[in-house]
Image (cartoon, rainbow, N blue to C red; front, side, top):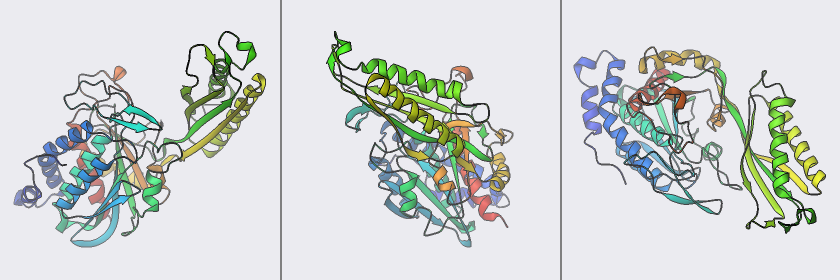
Length: 432
């Protein structure tokens, strides 16, 4: 289940206890992160080659639990369905800090050509789909295991407790299911011990080793949009005898595009309303009775969210009425805005600078991507950070984004991610 490597906790402990590093935690962490880097890369490749969809992360969770137990951590499995929580109690009393990684992959057919590319398939909402770590969660798992290894080697000197949260289903559960941060919290991921603050790192296509974040609102809030239309089936040669679902879907898409472009001021608050799937029909010459469309809404304020939902529902219902069909828009699976605690955001720049000197931007642009890390931030002070992972030979303008079948990273940045997580945890616990 694990990966064969030569690095051990004893080897790290030897590095960390070397007199040359005794005076500097920074030097200790840098040395330990370098030692564990081959293991982090091996973990990343193993998880990447064996991706699992949300709430199906059985193999990944078993790997995580095995490695955490080998480090001597207290481990809870089956948290939030397939989640894992590891607890490292330091040698001295103090506060409790949490670090979080997500484990789930996406229904994407990988096209990277990597020697460890995924060939996996799985069932998602009734369909057999290809599976790929197209959002970098494989790297998140590997980096957090690396951070756990480094911190376990420094256990005696840690003043407090570090909680490692490995979460399933960040991308959202299947329709009608539950999962992700919501269930992790309900299952006590932030309790026993009670967490005082939490940090997270997400990799992306930015400049390698760049670390970006901003105080307060950072990632957008998200809602899943499902549109259902009930019409009248007819022959494709006689569209007037039924309700043309293709025309209905086209009108709905045009109307929704106009909401974001013409009916609200996107200058005051970024807004994205996207239709991503259209499902109707089984034959080329039958106009079907049913149409189902799905998409996503991204907003940064509750007021904007309510406004767009109201306009969308009104427009969809009106288009259905015009065609003589019944059309309804429903919004579910809400993620709030990922909110970085203002005071913690100001403080965290120093530990991030130690991880990636001169490459930290604490006033990054708003991100229209969404994260259920936001739910932890509603419970305890939180900071979420982006780590750039683009390879040097990939132009910035054409770099494949997260969720692309070509998404890949420069594995050298994993060492930076490990250091960032370790420094955030150690420095937080050392705060007076």
